[in-house]
Image 1 (cartoon, rainbow, N blue to C red):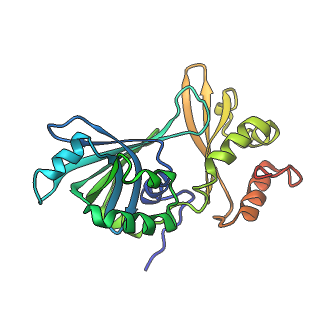
Image 2: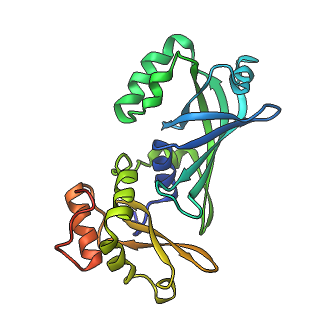
Length: 251
């Protein structure tokens, strides 16, 4: 079987990663007001979401046992202040079902083993869990939009650095202007006149938002090979910057 060579996460991996660190999400059902979602966990062709117990979405799922066609919209935002913080928009499509109340706690403990979201502590305290049986997803970024099948999401895994990325990006932006300057010299010449800001870090490389006079552009620098731990990540960033003795962004 042929192997596809890439220098960035697949669309399915990007969706899985964004859902692990939700900062803004809504569930929409036809005929009902959109309801805020505080956690999204993808597992085996399903999305488990936490939602207010008194929302329209909860009422819609009580109406019948067959579930309700629904869409969960996830907004992936940069962890620093930018002119435009949105990195991507994700739409998860499927059929929404209630999770029986007597199963919620056990399911939450299972989810917490791989997705330790503080929001799970709200379960039973004004929040309930719903299950979206996925039929597919769409991700939109500054470079375009792509459809992702439910089975692709099942096979994909989130980026290994999803828990720490926000902290690292903030640290890089506020305390490592030297690293940003060095990395900026690796960008295409037409992007070097703008303000270079860190946008994302993953096992494949670093993304940047270049804020220019006429608009913003997103770009990335890729590592020589994907990394899987913090030490390898630090070495890869230093190699990209061409300064092996720069302080690590994780210090």
